Length: 303
Image (cartoon, rainbow, N blue to C red; front, side):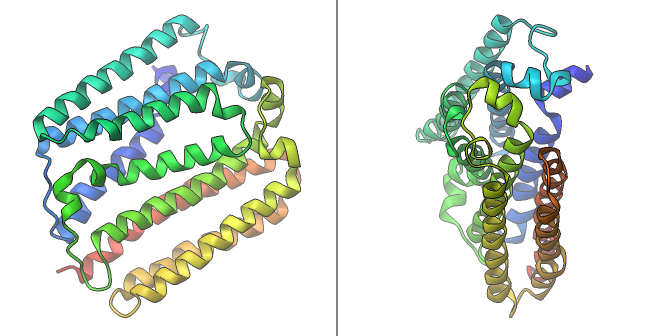
């Protein structure tokens, strides 16, 4: 059972569940947003996203086998739990179920375009695993974009939600979703760079062309600092925008999120070897969670 949870990356699935629940059961009531999805359709959408995500992990593990045997041998499950052929079959079954559910959702909502939004991650995750992972920086951008995409996904598949954007003072519902998506994109782009550093040896054997392999630690640290700079500027802009009417949110961003950015900057300066990036990766996970908690600061001003 422990190996099963490891295969499906249950912590990442839990984060998706948290984001979807946060949007539907917290943000939407605050902004008085009505959904075009009833409870059944919403849970089908959530199930579909989880199935597609697990499928992405499977196809990635299948194609990452050579690198993983070197980088994280204890995590390799193909040939242990499943053969490679069985893993491929499981991947196909998950995606066929996801496509079937998407067809049913489009029938329930009478919203045909919803199929397109489901095919985007399925196709990108496949080509990421079999093709783009060998390309410099493209793989990092795809992963970060897909994580951001998962946050805006509910907005895309719910036509009624798209049409509504009732603001609370200083904020709009759509702007909050976009902020969370951008926050997730920058956090995970940095995390992908940190993972490339940790996985250098196995990636070289597998023939991958990562930023770390081509340019070394110095360039990766400079890129990471540049992303931190973008982060800092973005947070300051948001604080200035919301300060007149959302002071609690502004205070939270100033005293919870920005100190995390400075901590990351300090830790990056201390990095001397590949394994040091593990602490950066852990801090970025914590930063993502801290960023999500920022939405709870909106409550006092929404009544």
